[in-house]
Image 1 (cartoon, rainbow over the protein chains, first blue to last red):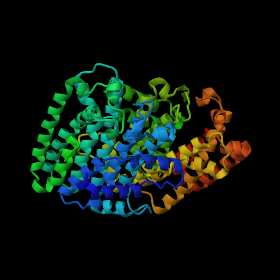
Image 2 (image 1 turned 180 degrees about the vertical axis):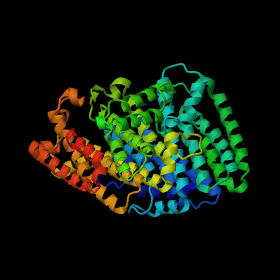
Image 3 (image 1 turned 30 degrees about the vertical axis):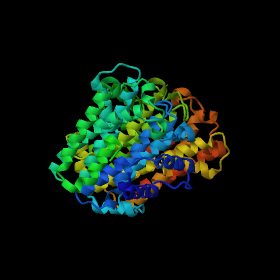
Image 4 (image 1 turned 180 degrees about the horizontal axis):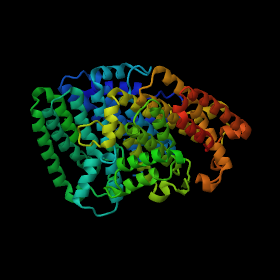
Length: 304
Length: 304
């Protein structure tokens, strides 16, 4: 995503600063956290937050704390998902998974630590000697109540009513025939909830109106519930090089997906429908939404 | 702890309300969360928060949200600590550990969910339809900036510079000769950090002065770093019935503890010294600190 190169660099720089240093004690844990954060992630979620907030004129640097927090929560979920007790994936993005490199105990703790750090940087207030450029920018631009709202959004989306709920139902559905409503539940919770939260956090950061909130929430729902279908399509059509994990890993585990239930054609039709839906919503913002439109195209087609 | 029975009941009632119901979807996860939360914990940490806040006149109900959040964080840490990849404990408080009852995957997710829920209830703001009596009491009594401070305290204490840091160093020290500084690091981080946070959260809730903060922070340091030593003493002298886990489990794992390094006599002397130190600090608050003094005695001697 060359057009977002500057933004991705800014996100990576902030992440590098906010994570504990590899040489700091305890080194193994810090190395494990950095290993997974800097593993070639596409930074889709932090980009979404930044691009939406910028629709409303937020200065990029003021939004880096919630963007990095979101990427930490996403990364923690990948580390825990890959564990032997969970999806038992040995590879992630073409590299050995955290538990293969550092062992299970450290992988569990690195995940725990990333989730905790995400919430810590969002809660940070000045005056405790832990201030830094990113925290100061965030605190100065975003009032306390809005910072609490962002914390509520991210913890709700990551919790039982969101990502974790989706993950447990996904695990429990392995090898079972499940009805379409359950597939919907998994998709909208496991990946959809965090995606939707990115949209709402962007609007909170940008101090958008009630109407903006409604509009972008509709867009979030359209994309959030479709992202997993697109991921499953890529999983089926992709290859190990491109995706960094075993081709068709989910089919191997006999996971019921939208794809396995409705087939490739219906999945692609759903994607096109949701893309058009979100495109129309974003058209309201005209040229300002250009970069966001391109990110949405990338999310749904991995092309822009 | 009969004298705290009313308080413990209030904490348990609030926890029962704040956790998702056992019959709600997804049931397994909700059951696992409740199984560990209602496993006979002594509620020392939430009691500490309530008693300190009440030193300054806070109404009990206004402090139940942070108290319950602290108990959730503590419980999540126990679930993850007991996992096969970590301390591999099959029993906790005389009952099978979470991973023995629900399996590893659900235990990992139940821990993740409790940590996330703790932070979610602290971040909750009114007006999103999720308000309830406990949240409303908390929000009305504690201003947004103080709520952010409490979130920062709890996430910092639970993170790399606190509990998780202590846990990884503890794991890495198994079967090794480690210097006293490392034992100190483990004790002050693995259990001490969360304990100290209880003191500071109590002062924030009670809107104590800078002096109160300094005073109670000193008390926190004294107790926080000693709690693990007391726990090790009980582990050695206790029996399976009383502690609910295998006698001397830590010695079995060849864990270096203050006890194994300095012996029982020095451990008891340290405990007495720290008890007197904290007693003197709390004497400043006179009769008002009576219940708190008894809780501190219970923490260090399991007697009051």
